[in-house]
Amino acid sequence: MNQHFQNELSIVVNKFPNLAVKSLGQEIYLRGILDVPNDNGDIVGSFLIEIHSVEKFPYRFPKLYEVGGEIPVHPDWHKYNDNSCCLTVEPDELIICRHGITLSYFIESIAIPYFANQLYRKAEGKYFNEYPHGYQGLYVFYAELFNNKDISVWLEYLKRTFSGKKAMRNDKCYCASGKKFKYCHMKTEEKLRVLGRTRILNDIQDIITSMR
Image 1 (cartoon, helix red, strand yellow):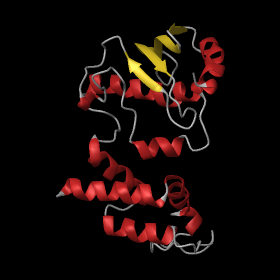
Image 2 (cartoon, rainbow, N blue to C red; image 1 turned 180 degrees about the horizontal axis):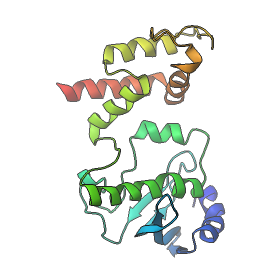
Image 3 (spheres, rainbow, N blue to C red; image 1 turned 180 degrees about the vertical axis):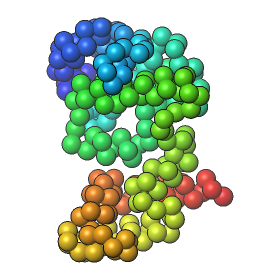
């Protein structure tokens, strides 16, 4: 049992009284109703969920399951056959969790927005914002991260990031935007270093292969 996960359970059930600690054999997990509020604090939807620990928590998301059947089991609905929820692309998760997350943060900032987006799709027929599945989702993630859709430009920026030569905060950014580096690609470089050169190159190769 992940000790970080177990230590936070009492905090979570006090904050979310409709969630309860359950056990199955050696496993301890959360199960119950998660309410989704709107901007005014009014409850606009509720989902029966389970949250299970993973070995790498708090540096990875726990597993979130929608077990009440409100969301169809289909990749287009970001829900898998085992009722687990697809929350984002993996590199985005790694960046979010780079300093570790709390279970309360996960529920408030990841799980509730996920279910709010499901309610939005039911009402509007589309998601408010999402990453597509598979390598297309990776492409969209990196295009947003690099602020450029050209993979050759990604490779150029990647080479520069890991060259050992750091741009100064007040230098003009190398992307030719005319902005200072600190207002342009500095945060991009910080996130790239979290992911690591090898992982990013592997992701880019997978994206290129999927486009053939």
